[in-house]
Length: 241
Image (spheres, rainbow, N blue to C red):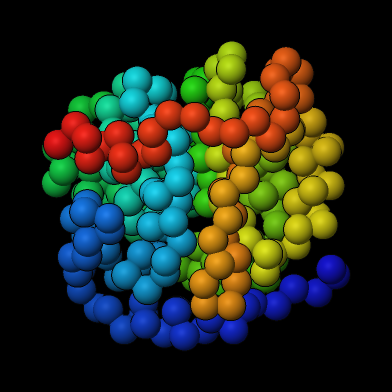
C-alpha cells in the first residue's frame, strides 16, 4: 500500500470532536472522563471501550502507555491497581488532559504524564507497554489528527523497533490496530522487530475491525498464540470497587 487514505468514518468523527469548544464530561465503562477540546474523544469512538473490555488486568504491574489521549486507559490501569503508570503523548493538550483526569480520579501519586514523541522522553523498563496506534498512514494536520493519522506509519515503525528495549523480563506489549490500516506493513515490522503475537482480540463495528494484539520478544520461551488467562482490566477493577 503506497498511498494511504482515511476510512470513511474519520471525517465525521473529527467534525464531532471539533464542535466542542470547552471541556466536557463523559462516561467510559463506568469511569468519569473529562475531554478537552482538540483531544481524541471516546464519546464518538467505540474502540476505547473495546480495549478496556479485553485488556488483561494490570494490577501490580508497571505500565507505560504511548499515546494516552484523554487518559482513559491510563486512568483504568491506575484504578485497576497498577504499581506505576507512565503515560505519554506527542500532543501537549493530550498530556494536560491525561493529567487532569488522573488528578480528578485521585491517581496522581502513582502516575507520571510526559510529552514524548513515541519513546523520545521515556526511560526505564515496564511490565506492560501499550500503544493504540493510529490506523492511517496519512499526514496529521493538527494535534487532534495525530490520534488518527501517522505519516507513512513513522510512529508505528519507531514503536515496534524500540518497544522491546523498554520491557522487563516476561513483559508484554499491547498494540491496538485495525484492518483499515496497512496490515502487510504491520506484519513485516513485527517480523523485523522479532516480536511474536501471543493473543489477538477483535471486534467489528461501523465498517471496520479493531484489534488488540498481545506481543512479546521472540526470545521468550512460550508457545505463541497461547490463550489469555485471568481477569480483564475492567473485571478486575469492578471487583475491587
